[in-house]
Image 1 (cartoon, rainbow, N blue to C red):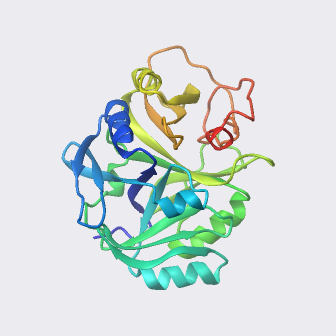
Image 2 (tube, rainbow, N blue to C red):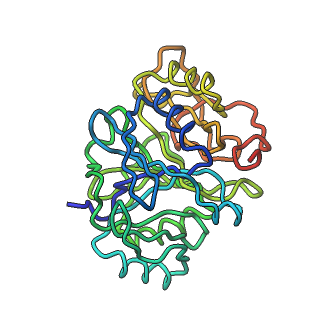
Length: 290
C-alpha cells in the first residue's frame, strides 16, 4: 500500500553527501545504508532498520541552475502520470517528468507558488506509514511556507484530497493545519512579504530537543530559533545543516516554558503553535545566507 495522498518518502540533495550523512546520523540518530546503483550514488537514512529518507549529491546541472542543498518530500500517488498532468492543468510546473528511478516511478513538480515537491508511485525503499509520525527518527510534521496559504490549501486539496486538520484553541486563522486519510500531518502559513522563497519545512522527531540542538551546533549546523515549547510538552527548533539545507526538530524538552504566539521564524513560518515571541532578524535565514 502506497498511502496515496500522504508524504511517504523524503530526500536530501546536497553538495557533500558524506558530510551530510555524518551530520544527520549524529543529530537525529539515523543509520546509513548504501543503496547505490551503477548509475547513481544513493544512501538511505534508517530509523532502526526502517528506511525513512534518501541522500544523494545535488546534480551538477541543478547547481549550474542555482539549486542549493534542500530536503524534498515525496507524496505517494496511485498514478504519477495522471497526477502530474493535473498539477500542470492547475498551474503547477513539472521539473522532472514521470521517470523510473531507484525508488520508484517519480515526478518532480512545483505547486503554482513555485514550491518544489515530488510524486512517487510504487515506492521501493520502504513504506513510511502515516501512523508512525510520532516515532523517533521519523518526519513528524510537514509545514508549507506559502505565498498564500489559502490558495495553496485549495491546490493541494484538489490534487491529493487533503482536508482541514482539527482546529486547536491556540491556532490562529492565519495557520491551516491539514490532514490526509484522517490524520493531521502538517500545516500551512503565508510568509511575510520579502521573506525567503516558499518551501516545505520538514520536522524530524528526536528524543530530547536540547541535546539534539547541541548536536546541531557541534556538527557545524545552525539553529535559527528555539527550542520553543508546544502545547503538551513537546519542543521544536528550526535549523540548517552545514551545507545550508533547512530542517526542524521536535522532541521532549526539560527547561522552563517560554510561551507566546509566533508566526515568524527569521522569515520562515512557525509550526503554528504556542512558541516564544522574541526579536527576529529577517536577514538571518538559510535562504538569505546561502
